[in-house]
Image 1 (cartoon, rainbow over the protein chains, first blue to last red):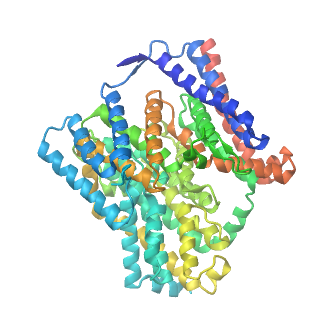
Image 2 (image 1 turned 90 degrees about the vertical axis):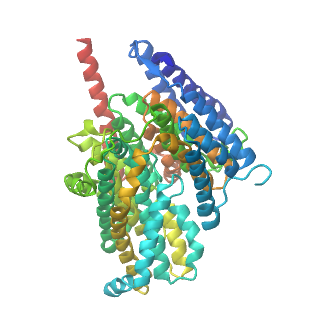
Image 3 (image 1 turned 180 degrees about the horizontal axis):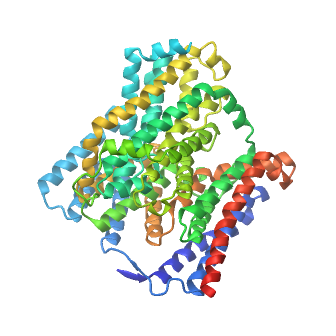
Length: 145
Length: 493
Protein backbone atom coordinates (compact mmCIF):
# COMPACT_ATOMS: atom_id res chain seq x y z
CA UNK A 1 0.00 0.00 0.00
CA UNK A 2 1.37 3.40 -0.98
CA UNK A 3 0.37 6.79 0.43
CA UNK A 4 1.58 10.27 -0.43
CA UNK A 5 4.02 11.09 2.38
CA UNK A 6 2.87 14.71 2.37
CA UNK A 7 -0.69 13.73 3.31
CA UNK A 8 0.31 10.96 5.71
CA UNK A 9 2.67 13.17 7.72
CA UNK A 10 0.22 16.08 7.69
CA UNK A 11 -2.50 13.80 9.07
CA UNK A 12 -0.16 12.61 11.85
CA UNK A 13 0.75 16.22 12.70
CA UNK A 14 -2.89 17.29 12.73
CA UNK A 15 -3.79 14.45 15.11
CA UNK A 16 -1.06 15.32 17.62
CA UNK A 17 -1.86 19.01 17.13
CA UNK A 18 -5.50 18.26 17.98
CA UNK A 19 -4.37 16.43 21.14
CA UNK A 20 -2.29 19.46 22.14
CA UNK A 21 -5.23 21.83 21.53
CA UNK A 22 -7.52 19.52 23.54
CA UNK A 23 -5.06 19.62 26.46
CA UNK A 24 -4.88 23.42 26.22
CA UNK A 25 -8.67 23.68 26.33
CA UNK A 26 -9.03 21.17 29.18
CA UNK A 27 -6.31 22.85 31.23
CA UNK A 28 -8.46 25.98 31.63
CA UNK A 29 -10.33 24.10 34.38
CA UNK A 30 -7.17 23.58 36.44
CA UNK A 31 -5.39 25.88 38.88
CA UNK A 32 -2.65 28.20 37.59
CA UNK A 33 0.03 25.93 39.05
CA UNK A 34 -1.44 22.70 37.64
CA UNK A 35 -1.81 24.11 34.13
CA UNK A 36 1.32 26.23 33.68
CA UNK A 37 3.80 23.56 32.59
CA UNK A 38 1.30 21.53 30.48
CA UNK A 39 0.30 24.77 28.72
CA UNK A 40 3.91 25.65 27.91
CA UNK A 41 4.42 22.11 26.59
CA UNK A 42 1.25 22.17 24.45
CA UNK A 43 2.14 25.57 22.96
CA UNK A 44 5.67 24.32 22.24
CA UNK A 45 4.22 21.25 20.48
CA UNK A 46 1.83 23.40 18.42
CA UNK A 47 4.59 25.78 17.34
CA UNK A 48 6.84 22.97 16.14
CA UNK A 49 3.91 21.30 14.35
CA UNK A 50 3.05 24.58 12.62
CA UNK A 51 6.67 24.96 11.51
CA UNK A 52 6.75 21.43 10.10
CA UNK A 53 3.45 21.97 8.26
CA UNK A 54 4.98 25.14 6.80
CA UNK A 55 7.96 23.09 5.64
CA UNK A 56 5.69 20.46 4.09
CA UNK A 57 3.12 22.68 2.38
CA UNK A 58 4.78 26.03 1.70
CA UNK A 59 8.34 24.87 1.06
CA UNK A 60 7.05 21.61 -0.47
CA UNK A 61 9.82 19.61 1.17
CA UNK A 62 8.16 16.22 0.55
CA UNK A 63 7.40 16.62 -3.14
CA UNK A 64 6.74 13.25 -4.79
CA UNK A 65 7.71 11.20 -1.71
CA UNK A 66 5.60 8.14 -0.90
CA UNK A 67 5.04 6.09 2.24
CA UNK A 68 4.98 2.32 1.79
CA UNK A 69 3.05 0.13 4.23
CA UNK A 70 3.36 -3.62 3.86
CA UNK A 71 0.09 -5.47 3.23
CA UNK A 72 0.68 -7.66 6.30
CA UNK A 73 0.75 -4.68 8.72
CA UNK A 74 -2.98 -3.94 8.83
CA UNK A 75 -4.08 -7.57 9.46
CA UNK A 76 -1.38 -7.77 12.15
CA UNK A 77 -2.93 -4.80 13.94
CA UNK A 78 -6.22 -6.75 13.96
CA UNK A 79 -4.41 -9.85 15.24
CA UNK A 80 -2.88 -7.78 18.08
CA UNK A 81 -6.27 -6.29 18.91
CA UNK A 82 -7.76 -9.79 18.96
CA UNK A 83 -5.02 -11.06 21.28
CA UNK A 84 -5.50 -8.09 23.65
CA UNK A 85 -9.26 -8.72 23.73
CA UNK A 86 -8.60 -12.45 24.16
CA UNK A 87 -6.29 -11.89 27.15
CA UNK A 88 -9.03 -9.75 28.71
CA UNK A 89 -11.86 -12.18 27.95
CA UNK A 90 -10.39 -15.69 28.24
CA UNK A 91 -7.13 -15.03 30.11
CA UNK A 92 -3.49 -15.10 29.13
CA UNK A 93 -2.96 -18.86 28.98
CA UNK A 94 -5.88 -19.76 26.69
CA UNK A 95 -5.48 -16.75 24.42
CA UNK A 96 -1.74 -17.46 24.05
CA UNK A 97 -2.54 -21.08 23.15
CA UNK A 98 -4.63 -19.67 20.29
CA UNK A 99 -2.58 -16.57 19.33
CA UNK A 100 0.88 -18.16 19.16
CA UNK A 101 0.03 -20.91 16.60
CA UNK A 102 -2.32 -18.71 14.57
CA UNK A 103 0.33 -15.99 14.30
CA UNK A 104 3.03 -18.50 13.33
CA UNK A 105 0.80 -20.01 10.64
CA UNK A 106 -0.16 -16.54 9.36
CA UNK A 107 3.53 -15.64 9.12
CA UNK A 108 4.01 -18.52 6.70
CA UNK A 109 5.07 -21.43 8.91
CA UNK A 110 3.42 -24.61 7.68
CA UNK A 111 4.87 -27.37 9.86
CA UNK A 112 1.89 -27.96 12.12
CA UNK A 113 3.65 -30.34 14.50
CA UNK A 114 6.54 -27.92 15.07
CA UNK A 115 4.08 -25.05 15.67
CA UNK A 116 2.11 -27.18 18.16
CA UNK A 117 5.22 -28.26 20.08
CA UNK A 118 6.64 -24.71 20.28
CA UNK A 119 3.27 -23.38 21.46
CA UNK A 120 2.78 -25.96 24.20
CA UNK A 121 6.41 -25.79 25.40
CA UNK A 122 6.36 -21.97 25.44
CA UNK A 123 3.08 -21.67 27.35
CA UNK A 124 4.18 -24.39 29.80
CA UNK A 125 7.53 -22.61 30.35
CA UNK A 126 5.78 -19.30 30.99
CA UNK A 127 3.50 -20.98 33.52
CA UNK A 128 6.34 -22.78 35.29
CA UNK A 129 8.70 -19.80 35.44
CA UNK A 130 6.30 -17.00 36.26
CA UNK A 131 3.37 -18.61 38.07
CA UNK A 132 5.07 -21.54 39.82
CA UNK A 133 8.63 -20.18 40.14
CA UNK A 134 8.04 -16.52 40.93
CA UNK A 135 4.40 -16.70 42.05
CA UNK A 136 3.68 -13.88 39.65
CA UNK A 137 0.07 -13.69 38.43
CA UNK A 138 -0.58 -13.66 34.69
CA UNK A 139 -3.57 -11.77 33.27
CA UNK A 140 -6.79 -13.56 34.30
CA UNK A 141 -9.98 -13.74 32.28
CA UNK A 142 -13.19 -11.96 33.24
CA UNK A 143 -14.42 -15.24 34.76
CA UNK A 144 -11.18 -15.83 36.64
CA UNK A 145 -9.09 -18.45 34.83
CA UNK B 1 37.96 -3.31 57.37
CA UNK B 2 38.35 -3.28 53.58
CA UNK B 3 40.51 -6.42 53.78
CA UNK B 4 37.91 -8.14 56.00
CA UNK B 5 35.26 -7.21 53.44
CA UNK B 6 37.32 -8.75 50.65
CA UNK B 7 37.75 -12.00 52.58
CA UNK B 8 34.05 -12.17 53.43
CA UNK B 9 33.07 -11.54 49.79
CA UNK B 10 35.27 -14.45 48.72
CA UNK B 11 33.45 -16.89 51.00
CA UNK B 12 31.99 -19.71 48.84
CA UNK B 13 28.38 -18.90 49.79
CA UNK B 14 28.77 -15.22 48.83
CA UNK B 15 30.46 -16.16 45.55
CA UNK B 16 27.48 -18.47 44.90
CA UNK B 17 25.00 -15.64 45.61
CA UNK B 18 26.89 -13.32 43.25
CA UNK B 19 26.94 -15.93 40.46
CA UNK B 20 23.28 -16.89 40.91
CA UNK B 21 22.14 -13.26 41.19
CA UNK B 22 24.08 -12.20 38.10
CA UNK B 23 22.82 -15.11 35.97
CA UNK B 24 19.22 -14.62 37.14
CA UNK B 25 19.50 -10.87 36.55
CA UNK B 26 20.79 -11.39 33.00
CA UNK B 27 17.90 -13.77 32.17
CA UNK B 28 15.19 -11.61 33.76
CA UNK B 29 16.69 -8.41 32.36
CA UNK B 30 16.50 -9.83 28.86
CA UNK B 31 12.71 -10.26 29.13
CA UNK B 32 11.09 -6.95 28.15
CA UNK B 33 9.50 -5.21 31.11
CA UNK B 34 10.69 -7.51 33.89
CA UNK B 35 14.00 -5.80 34.72
CA UNK B 36 15.96 -5.42 37.93
CA UNK B 37 13.36 -3.81 40.22
CA UNK B 38 10.78 -6.53 39.71
CA UNK B 39 13.29 -9.38 40.06
CA UNK B 40 14.71 -7.81 43.22
CA UNK B 41 11.20 -7.28 44.61
CA UNK B 42 10.39 -10.95 43.92
CA UNK B 43 13.60 -12.09 45.62
CA UNK B 44 13.38 -9.77 48.63
CA UNK B 45 11.21 -12.11 50.77
CA UNK B 46 13.74 -14.93 50.21
CA UNK B 47 16.53 -12.76 51.66
CA UNK B 48 14.97 -12.43 55.13
CA UNK B 49 16.71 -15.58 56.36
CA UNK B 50 20.03 -14.72 54.76
CA UNK B 51 22.94 -12.80 56.28
CA UNK B 52 23.02 -9.04 55.54
CA UNK B 53 26.10 -9.47 53.31
CA UNK B 54 24.54 -12.38 51.39
CA UNK B 55 21.23 -10.56 50.86
CA UNK B 56 22.96 -7.42 49.60
CA UNK B 57 25.29 -9.34 47.30
CA UNK B 58 22.38 -11.35 45.85
CA UNK B 59 20.21 -8.29 45.22
CA UNK B 60 23.13 -6.15 44.02
CA UNK B 61 24.15 -8.88 41.57
CA UNK B 62 20.61 -9.07 40.20
CA UNK B 63 20.74 -5.27 39.76
CA UNK B 64 24.03 -5.40 37.79
CA UNK B 65 23.06 -8.53 35.83
CA UNK B 66 19.64 -7.20 34.79
CA UNK B 67 21.11 -3.90 33.60
CA UNK B 68 23.38 -5.85 31.26
CA UNK B 69 20.78 -8.53 30.42
CA UNK B 70 18.46 -5.91 28.95
CA UNK B 71 21.08 -5.16 26.34
CA UNK B 72 21.14 -8.76 25.05
CA UNK B 73 17.53 -8.59 23.84
CA UNK B 74 18.14 -5.00 22.68
CA UNK B 75 21.01 -6.20 20.49
CA UNK B 76 19.54 -9.46 19.22
CA UNK B 77 15.86 -8.52 18.89
CA UNK B 78 15.84 -4.71 18.95
CA UNK B 79 13.70 -5.13 22.05
CA UNK B 80 15.31 -3.46 25.08
CA UNK B 81 14.72 -5.65 28.12
CA UNK B 82 15.01 -2.67 30.45
CA UNK B 83 14.84 1.13 30.02
CA UNK B 84 18.60 1.11 30.72
CA UNK B 85 19.33 -0.48 27.37
CA UNK B 86 17.00 1.54 25.13
CA UNK B 87 19.95 3.24 23.38
CA UNK B 88 21.93 0.01 23.03
CA UNK B 89 19.50 -1.19 20.37
CA UNK B 90 20.23 1.80 18.09
CA UNK B 91 23.56 0.36 16.98
CA UNK B 92 23.59 -3.08 18.61
CA UNK B 93 20.66 -4.31 16.53
CA UNK B 94 22.09 -3.16 13.18
CA UNK B 95 25.25 -5.06 14.15
CA UNK B 96 23.17 -8.19 14.80
CA UNK B 97 21.46 -7.72 11.43
CA UNK B 98 24.90 -7.69 9.81
CA UNK B 99 25.71 -11.01 11.52
CA UNK B 100 27.87 -9.24 14.16
CA UNK B 101 25.61 -10.09 17.12
CA UNK B 102 28.37 -11.83 19.07
CA UNK B 103 30.70 -8.90 18.56
CA UNK B 104 27.99 -6.47 19.74
CA UNK B 105 27.34 -8.57 22.85
CA UNK B 106 31.10 -8.71 23.46
CA UNK B 107 31.29 -4.92 23.29
CA UNK B 108 28.26 -4.58 25.57
CA UNK B 109 29.72 -7.04 28.11
CA UNK B 110 33.16 -5.44 28.19
CA UNK B 111 31.80 -1.87 28.25
CA UNK B 112 29.41 -2.86 31.04
CA UNK B 113 32.30 -4.45 32.94
CA UNK B 114 34.50 -1.35 32.59
CA UNK B 115 31.62 1.01 33.45
CA UNK B 116 30.57 -1.13 36.40
CA UNK B 117 34.11 -1.40 37.80
CA UNK B 118 34.73 2.35 37.36
CA UNK B 119 31.44 3.10 39.11
CA UNK B 120 32.43 0.70 41.87
CA UNK B 121 35.79 2.43 42.38
CA UNK B 122 33.97 5.75 42.69
CA UNK B 123 31.58 4.13 45.15
CA UNK B 124 34.56 2.89 47.16
CA UNK B 125 36.63 6.04 47.32
CA UNK B 126 34.47 9.03 46.43
CA UNK B 127 31.15 8.32 48.14
CA UNK B 128 31.25 11.18 50.69
CA UNK B 129 32.52 13.98 48.36
CA UNK B 130 30.22 12.93 45.50
CA UNK B 131 27.27 12.87 47.85
CA UNK B 132 28.11 16.47 48.83
CA UNK B 133 28.28 17.57 45.18
CA UNK B 134 24.94 15.92 44.44
CA UNK B 135 23.40 17.92 47.28
CA UNK B 136 24.37 21.16 45.45
CA UNK B 137 21.85 20.26 42.76
CA UNK B 138 18.70 21.94 43.97
CA UNK B 139 15.33 21.99 42.17
CA UNK B 140 16.43 24.79 39.81
CA UNK B 141 19.56 22.91 38.72
CA UNK B 142 17.61 19.68 38.27
CA UNK B 143 14.98 21.52 36.20
CA UNK B 144 17.68 23.04 33.98
CA UNK B 145 19.45 19.72 33.68
CA UNK B 146 16.28 17.98 32.43
CA UNK B 147 15.62 20.88 30.04
CA UNK B 148 19.16 20.61 28.71
CA UNK B 149 18.76 16.84 28.31
CA UNK B 150 15.55 17.29 26.31
CA UNK B 151 17.03 19.90 24.02
CA UNK B 152 20.39 18.29 23.39
CA UNK B 153 18.76 14.96 22.55
CA UNK B 154 16.13 16.52 20.28
CA UNK B 155 18.63 18.56 18.28
CA UNK B 156 21.33 15.90 18.10
CA UNK B 157 19.60 12.60 17.54
CA UNK B 158 18.19 13.35 14.09
CA UNK B 159 20.50 15.89 12.52
CA UNK B 160 18.69 15.82 9.19
CA UNK B 161 15.48 17.10 10.80
CA UNK B 162 15.75 18.84 14.14
CA UNK B 163 12.08 19.82 13.80
CA UNK B 164 11.00 16.18 13.86
CA UNK B 165 12.97 15.67 17.06
CA UNK B 166 11.34 18.73 18.60
CA UNK B 167 7.84 17.59 17.55
CA UNK B 168 8.43 14.18 19.17
CA UNK B 169 9.68 16.00 22.26
CA UNK B 170 6.57 18.20 22.26
CA UNK B 171 4.29 15.17 22.05
CA UNK B 172 6.17 13.48 24.89
CA UNK B 173 5.94 16.63 27.02
CA UNK B 174 2.19 16.87 26.39
CA UNK B 175 1.69 13.20 27.35
CA UNK B 176 3.85 13.62 30.47
CA UNK B 177 1.28 16.11 31.78
CA UNK B 178 -1.28 13.32 32.24
CA UNK B 179 -2.01 12.31 35.85
CA UNK B 180 -1.39 13.97 39.18
CA UNK B 181 0.31 17.36 39.23
CA UNK B 182 3.54 16.61 41.15
CA UNK B 183 3.15 19.58 43.49
CA UNK B 184 -0.54 20.40 44.00
CA UNK B 185 -1.76 16.82 43.49
CA UNK B 186 -4.51 18.00 41.12
CA UNK B 187 -5.69 15.42 38.59
CA UNK B 188 -5.12 16.42 34.97
CA UNK B 189 -6.17 15.08 31.55
CA UNK B 190 -7.44 11.74 32.86
CA UNK B 191 -10.77 11.86 30.96
CA UNK B 192 -12.35 10.14 33.96
CA UNK B 193 -10.19 7.04 33.56
CA UNK B 194 -8.69 5.84 36.88
CA UNK B 195 -5.86 4.19 34.91
CA UNK B 196 -4.51 7.58 33.80
CA UNK B 197 -4.37 9.00 37.33
CA UNK B 198 -0.81 7.72 37.82
CA UNK B 199 0.26 9.22 34.51
CA UNK B 200 1.91 7.51 31.57
CA UNK B 201 3.66 4.38 32.80
CA UNK B 202 7.27 4.07 31.73
CA UNK B 203 7.53 0.29 31.27
CA UNK B 204 4.50 -0.13 28.95
CA UNK B 205 5.63 2.96 27.01
CA UNK B 206 9.11 1.56 26.44
CA UNK B 207 7.88 -1.92 25.53
CA UNK B 208 5.38 -0.45 23.09
CA UNK B 209 7.76 2.08 21.54
CA UNK B 210 10.66 -0.28 21.01
CA UNK B 211 9.47 -3.91 21.19
CA UNK B 212 6.02 -3.81 19.56
CA UNK B 213 7.15 -1.39 16.87
CA UNK B 214 10.03 -3.75 16.10
CA UNK B 215 7.56 -6.63 15.82
CA UNK B 216 5.83 -4.61 13.08
CA UNK B 217 9.18 -4.32 11.32
CA UNK B 218 9.58 -8.12 11.59
CA UNK B 219 6.08 -8.62 10.16
CA UNK B 220 7.00 -6.47 7.17
CA UNK B 221 10.46 -7.92 6.59
CA UNK B 222 9.89 -11.65 7.28
CA UNK B 223 12.93 -13.97 7.08
CA UNK B 224 15.55 -13.87 9.81
CA UNK B 225 16.98 -11.00 11.86
CA UNK B 226 20.53 -11.52 10.68
CA UNK B 227 21.08 -10.97 6.99
CA UNK B 228 24.11 -13.19 7.21
CA UNK B 229 23.95 -16.76 8.46
CA UNK B 230 27.70 -16.66 9.04
CA UNK B 231 28.84 -14.97 12.25
CA UNK B 232 31.25 -12.12 11.49
CA UNK B 233 33.50 -11.09 14.35
CA UNK B 234 33.30 -12.84 17.65
CA UNK B 235 33.19 -12.12 21.32
CA UNK B 236 36.94 -11.46 21.46
CA UNK B 237 36.67 -8.98 18.63
CA UNK B 238 33.92 -7.25 20.62
CA UNK B 239 36.15 -7.12 23.72
CA UNK B 240 38.95 -5.62 21.60
CA UNK B 241 36.64 -3.08 19.91
CA UNK B 242 35.65 -1.69 23.31
CA UNK B 243 39.19 -0.48 23.95
CA UNK B 244 39.61 1.02 20.46
CA UNK B 245 37.44 3.93 21.57
CA UNK B 246 38.90 4.94 24.95
CA UNK B 247 37.47 8.48 24.72
CA UNK B 248 33.90 7.21 24.32
CA UNK B 249 34.44 4.62 27.05
CA UNK B 250 35.77 7.14 29.57
CA UNK B 251 33.31 9.91 28.69
CA UNK B 252 30.29 7.61 28.91
CA UNK B 253 31.49 6.10 32.18
CA UNK B 254 31.88 9.61 33.62
CA UNK B 255 28.40 10.60 32.36
CA UNK B 256 26.89 7.47 33.92
CA UNK B 257 28.78 7.96 37.18
CA UNK B 258 27.69 11.58 37.56
CA UNK B 259 24.06 10.87 36.63
CA UNK B 260 24.00 7.91 38.99
CA UNK B 261 25.18 10.08 41.85
CA UNK B 262 22.33 12.56 41.22
CA UNK B 263 19.15 11.22 42.81
CA UNK B 264 16.14 10.98 40.52
CA UNK B 265 17.54 11.05 36.98
CA UNK B 266 18.48 7.40 36.87
CA UNK B 267 19.66 4.79 34.46
CA UNK B 268 16.85 5.29 31.93
CA UNK B 269 18.15 8.71 30.94
CA UNK B 270 21.88 8.03 31.41
CA UNK B 271 22.20 5.61 28.50
CA UNK B 272 20.42 8.00 26.12
CA UNK B 273 22.51 10.98 27.22
CA UNK B 274 25.75 8.99 26.88
CA UNK B 275 24.69 7.80 23.41
CA UNK B 276 23.92 11.32 22.22
CA UNK B 277 27.18 12.65 23.69
CA UNK B 278 29.13 9.88 21.93
CA UNK B 279 27.40 10.64 18.62
CA UNK B 280 28.05 14.37 18.96
CA UNK B 281 31.77 13.86 19.69
CA UNK B 282 32.50 10.93 17.37
CA UNK B 283 34.55 11.23 14.18
CA UNK B 284 32.24 8.57 12.73
CA UNK B 285 28.91 10.13 13.75
CA UNK B 286 27.39 9.29 10.33
CA UNK B 287 27.83 5.58 11.11
CA UNK B 288 25.70 5.86 14.25
CA UNK B 289 22.47 3.94 13.79
CA UNK B 290 24.10 1.64 11.26
CA UNK B 291 26.10 -0.58 13.62
CA UNK B 292 28.80 1.68 15.07
CA UNK B 293 30.65 0.01 17.99
CA UNK B 294 30.77 3.38 19.80
CA UNK B 295 26.94 3.35 19.78
CA UNK B 296 27.05 0.22 21.96
CA UNK B 297 30.00 1.23 24.13
CA UNK B 298 28.44 4.53 25.21
CA UNK B 299 25.09 3.35 26.62
CA UNK B 300 26.52 0.14 28.09
CA UNK B 301 29.41 1.71 29.99
CA UNK B 302 27.16 4.49 31.26
CA UNK B 303 24.30 2.29 32.44
CA UNK B 304 26.50 -0.03 34.46
CA UNK B 305 28.36 2.93 35.96
CA UNK B 306 24.96 4.23 37.08
CA UNK B 307 24.11 0.97 38.85
CA UNK B 308 27.08 1.47 41.18
CA UNK B 309 27.11 5.24 41.64
CA UNK B 310 23.33 5.36 42.20
CA UNK B 311 24.18 3.63 45.46
CA UNK B 312 26.25 6.65 46.60
CA UNK B 313 23.28 8.84 47.64
CA UNK B 314 21.48 5.68 48.80
CA UNK B 315 24.20 4.56 51.18
CA UNK B 316 25.50 7.95 52.32
CA UNK B 317 22.36 10.09 52.46
CA UNK B 318 19.52 7.56 52.39
CA UNK B 319 18.27 9.03 49.07
CA UNK B 320 17.75 6.20 46.57
CA UNK B 321 18.73 7.21 43.03
CA UNK B 322 16.49 4.58 41.40
CA UNK B 323 13.76 2.09 42.25
CA UNK B 324 16.33 -0.71 42.39
CA UNK B 325 18.49 1.35 44.76
CA UNK B 326 15.37 1.89 46.88
CA UNK B 327 14.88 -1.88 47.05
CA UNK B 328 18.50 -2.32 48.13
CA UNK B 329 17.95 0.30 50.80
CA UNK B 330 14.92 -1.70 51.92
CA UNK B 331 17.11 -4.81 52.21
CA UNK B 332 19.66 -2.83 54.24
CA UNK B 333 17.01 -1.64 56.66
CA UNK B 334 15.44 -5.12 56.95
CA UNK B 335 18.82 -6.26 58.23
CA UNK B 336 19.04 -3.37 60.71
CA UNK B 337 21.49 -1.20 58.76
CA UNK B 338 20.71 2.51 58.47
CA UNK B 339 22.16 4.57 55.58
CA UNK B 340 24.72 7.14 56.67
CA UNK B 341 28.26 7.32 58.01
CA UNK B 342 27.76 4.23 60.21
CA UNK B 343 27.75 2.10 57.05
CA UNK B 344 31.41 3.05 56.54
CA UNK B 345 32.41 2.78 60.20
CA UNK B 346 30.43 0.48 62.52
CA UNK B 347 29.04 -1.68 59.72
CA UNK B 348 32.00 -1.13 57.40
CA UNK B 349 32.65 -4.85 56.98
CA UNK B 350 29.12 -5.50 55.64
CA UNK B 351 29.36 -2.50 53.30
CA UNK B 352 32.77 -3.41 51.89
CA UNK B 353 31.73 -7.06 51.51
CA UNK B 354 28.79 -5.81 49.47
CA UNK B 355 31.08 -3.62 47.32
CA UNK B 356 33.42 -6.53 46.61
CA UNK B 357 30.35 -8.66 45.87
CA UNK B 358 29.35 -6.12 43.21
CA UNK B 359 32.86 -6.42 41.76
CA UNK B 360 32.42 -10.21 41.61
CA UNK B 361 29.05 -9.70 39.91
CA UNK B 362 30.71 -7.56 37.22
CA UNK B 363 33.25 -10.33 36.68
CA UNK B 364 30.58 -13.03 36.51
CA UNK B 365 28.72 -10.93 33.96
CA UNK B 366 31.67 -11.40 31.61
CA UNK B 367 31.96 -15.12 32.38
CA UNK B 368 28.24 -15.82 31.90
CA UNK B 369 28.40 -13.93 28.59
CA UNK B 370 31.39 -15.96 27.39
CA UNK B 371 29.57 -19.23 28.12
CA UNK B 372 26.07 -18.25 26.96
CA UNK B 373 26.60 -16.01 23.95
CA UNK B 374 26.99 -18.81 21.39
CA UNK B 375 23.50 -20.09 22.21
CA UNK B 376 21.95 -16.64 22.48
CA UNK B 377 23.01 -15.38 19.05
CA UNK B 378 21.24 -18.32 17.40
CA UNK B 379 18.03 -16.35 17.87
CA UNK B 380 19.13 -14.06 15.00
CA UNK B 381 18.96 -16.93 12.51
CA UNK B 382 15.54 -18.19 13.62
CA UNK B 383 12.67 -17.29 11.25
CA UNK B 384 10.84 -14.25 12.66
CA UNK B 385 7.57 -16.10 12.05
CA UNK B 386 8.39 -18.12 15.20
CA UNK B 387 9.68 -15.14 17.17
CA UNK B 388 6.85 -12.65 16.60
CA UNK B 389 4.08 -14.30 18.68
CA UNK B 390 6.54 -15.16 21.47
CA UNK B 391 7.89 -11.59 21.66
CA UNK B 392 4.35 -10.16 21.65
CA UNK B 393 3.31 -12.55 24.37
CA UNK B 394 6.38 -11.75 26.53
CA UNK B 395 5.68 -8.04 26.02
CA UNK B 396 2.19 -8.64 27.43
CA UNK B 397 3.62 -10.39 30.48
CA UNK B 398 6.28 -7.72 30.98
CA UNK B 399 3.88 -4.80 30.76
CA UNK B 400 1.26 -6.50 32.95
CA UNK B 401 3.65 -7.84 35.58
CA UNK B 402 4.77 -4.58 37.22
CA UNK B 403 1.32 -3.53 38.45
CA UNK B 404 -0.92 -6.49 37.53
CA UNK B 405 -2.96 -4.10 35.43
CA UNK B 406 -4.39 -5.13 32.06
CA UNK B 407 -4.51 -1.41 31.16
CA UNK B 408 -0.70 -1.47 30.92
CA UNK B 409 -0.93 -4.13 28.21
CA UNK B 410 -3.41 -1.98 26.27
CA UNK B 411 -1.12 1.07 26.63
CA UNK B 412 1.77 -1.05 25.34
CA UNK B 413 -0.17 -1.82 22.17
CA UNK B 414 -1.21 1.84 21.80
CA UNK B 415 2.41 3.01 22.08
CA UNK B 416 3.41 0.25 19.67
CA UNK B 417 0.99 1.58 17.04
CA UNK B 418 2.16 5.16 17.64
CA UNK B 419 5.78 4.06 17.27
CA UNK B 420 4.94 2.15 14.07
CA UNK B 421 3.56 5.37 12.54
CA UNK B 422 6.47 7.46 13.86
CA UNK B 423 9.06 5.05 12.48
CA UNK B 424 7.35 5.10 9.09
CA UNK B 425 7.46 8.91 9.10
CA UNK B 426 11.04 8.90 10.48
CA UNK B 427 10.29 10.64 13.78
CA UNK B 428 12.77 9.77 16.56
CA UNK B 429 11.29 7.67 19.36
CA UNK B 430 13.81 8.66 22.06
CA UNK B 431 12.61 12.27 21.97
CA UNK B 432 9.09 11.02 22.77
CA UNK B 433 10.32 8.69 25.49
CA UNK B 434 12.56 11.08 27.40
CA UNK B 435 9.81 13.44 28.67
CA UNK B 436 7.86 10.38 29.86
CA UNK B 437 10.93 9.45 31.93
CA UNK B 438 11.88 12.93 33.17
CA UNK B 439 8.76 15.08 32.63
CA UNK B 440 7.53 14.84 36.23
CA UNK B 441 10.99 15.68 37.56
CA UNK B 442 11.19 18.72 35.30
CA UNK B 443 7.77 20.00 36.38
CA UNK B 444 8.51 19.39 40.05
CA UNK B 445 11.84 21.20 39.74
CA UNK B 446 10.18 24.16 38.00
CA UNK B 447 7.49 24.65 40.66
CA UNK B 448 9.75 23.99 43.64
CA UNK B 449 12.28 26.55 42.33
CA UNK B 450 9.60 29.21 41.95
CA UNK B 451 8.26 28.42 45.42
CA UNK B 452 11.74 28.78 46.91
CA UNK B 453 12.34 32.11 45.15
CA UNK B 454 8.88 33.50 45.88
CA UNK B 455 7.97 33.48 42.18
CA UNK B 456 11.19 35.06 40.89
CA UNK B 457 12.65 33.47 37.76
CA UNK B 458 16.13 34.69 38.72
CA UNK B 459 16.60 31.44 40.69
CA UNK B 460 17.18 29.70 37.34
CA UNK B 461 20.44 31.60 36.77
CA UNK B 462 21.46 32.31 40.35
CA UNK B 463 23.99 29.52 41.03
CA UNK B 464 27.21 28.85 39.09
CA UNK B 465 25.93 25.34 38.19
CA UNK B 466 22.74 26.89 36.71
CA UNK B 467 24.78 29.39 34.68
CA UNK B 468 26.90 26.62 33.16
CA UNK B 469 23.86 24.48 32.28
CA UNK B 470 22.04 27.51 30.79
CA UNK B 471 25.06 28.46 28.67
CA UNK B 472 25.44 24.92 27.33
CA UNK B 473 21.69 24.69 26.64
CA UNK B 474 21.78 28.03 24.79
CA UNK B 475 24.69 26.88 22.65
CA UNK B 476 23.02 23.57 21.84
CA UNK B 477 19.97 25.47 20.52
CA UNK B 478 21.88 28.17 18.64
CA UNK B 479 24.36 25.85 16.91
CA UNK B 480 21.78 23.87 14.85
CA UNK B 481 19.83 27.08 14.15
CA UNK B 482 22.96 28.66 12.65
CA UNK B 483 23.38 25.56 10.50
CA UNK B 484 19.74 25.80 9.37
CA UNK B 485 20.04 29.48 8.36
CA UNK B 486 23.41 28.88 6.67
CA UNK B 487 21.89 26.02 4.65
CA UNK B 488 18.85 28.13 3.72
CA UNK B 489 21.10 31.03 2.73
CA UNK B 490 23.05 28.76 0.41
CA UNK B 491 19.90 27.30 -1.17
CA UNK B 492 18.49 30.85 -1.79
CA UNK B 493 21.75 31.88 -3.53
